[in-house]
Image (tube, rainbow, N blue to C red; front, side, top):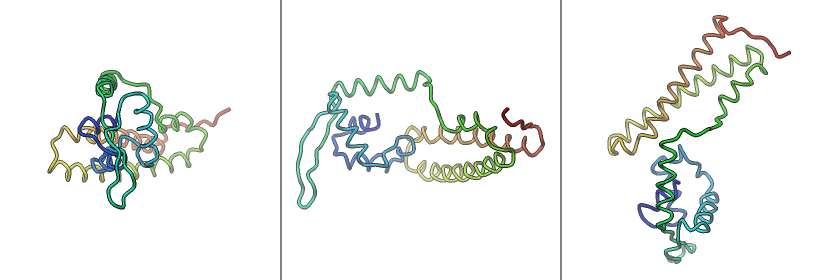
Length: 180
């Protein structure tokens, strides 16, 4: 979806697509850490007819670059995916709720210590995100920041919840019974 969206703006080569995603901080919501995954995704989009090769060329001492462009099928697929993802909640499996499901595997002290470390990590992430939002909001319209606003709301809700769990450990409101 990220690559199709970038290509809906203008044709580009793989490296430029990865750069744009990082420059726009979209790598916070899509994983493009490995350039190879961008190439693999482009190959799949090409095979599926969602993109075409616009041109292939070489500039001076640079490696050969393939410029990709979005097809009509790619644009309609992108719009369909976006509609579905916005309109229909997906069944997702994030790690943290899974870890909470198996919390009794730890002892109470170990669980409380891990959750206390998580509180600190969440506080740090929230501080960094607030700084980023403040900086970026000075030159980008809100429309381009809404995924960061969403991330902030989710982080804040998680932080509130984890703090309450740590407080429940401290007060004894969370009773620990090892598995039988």
